[in-house]
Image (cartoon, protein in one colour):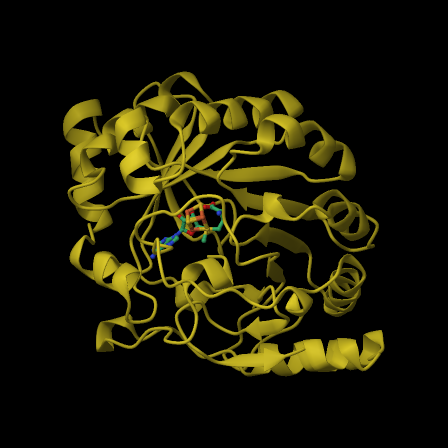
Length: 329
Ligand code: SAM
Ligand code: SF4
């Protein structure tokens, strides 16, 4: 398994398939002024397969498909099938807003996808419209149900907590875990760049300690659960008599950089070395020049070796040249 220069074992590849999205969450994509990668910049299914083969060859075991919105890729099933055919890849997961899952969940499961993380910030239809803008709660809920029916489980729900938008909704979201064996995870806002979304992410930030207190005041004390995996970014708990899990992902208030096991690949073919940092290593040029698997392995190992020790949000430093929708979370 590849080990970086700080001794961390890196075996998890998160692939952004596109920087386009069918929604416009207030903290992620502005309504105007967006620029996207040119259409010929996206890696093709065959190129993605080649990169994942190289990654599997050096010890990567898990792949996550993300975006933008990964379900917008017309060739998504082909991509999943290709990755599924690669020896050594034990798990393929996807992060999605679920809007297109009613039609896609079953074919994705058949293609080899193991599970999904679904992003929804509220159970209140009005507030979903306000935070996620082009989304309707009913559409997302149908997507969650389709994923569960197709066996893309365990269902993990990700909710970003945004002051004055949805910080009160965390109680209803956490309540979902009482009757269902779902994981509901609350994510702290992170700033990217310097535009409107960065301003919202800084000014509407809610620390997870506050979210936790709000949930415990309403629903009872959360009992800590042991982490199944040291690199799980979520600190997990259970409500009294609940079937599911409540998790807190706190990159700002409790950074987990020392257990980072990730490498990210942007839709336009760069290894992005840390979510909250601009450093990248290009792999697209090698792909376009017909680079073989061995040369891709060398590029990936160089990227792993160059991973920074951790983010510097506490010093006011964050990614400047990429937004979250261009990296994939
Ligand atoms: N479109 C898919 C989705 O929304 O799940 C996948 C891509 S999205 C960029 C991945 C995750 O990033 C989502 O859970 C979203 O809520 C989260 N996210 C986006 N912008 C964020 C920000 N500024 N801070 C924290 N999380 C953010
Ligand atoms: Fe789209 Fe996901 Fe960003 Fe929302 S968080 S705008 S669904 S990419």
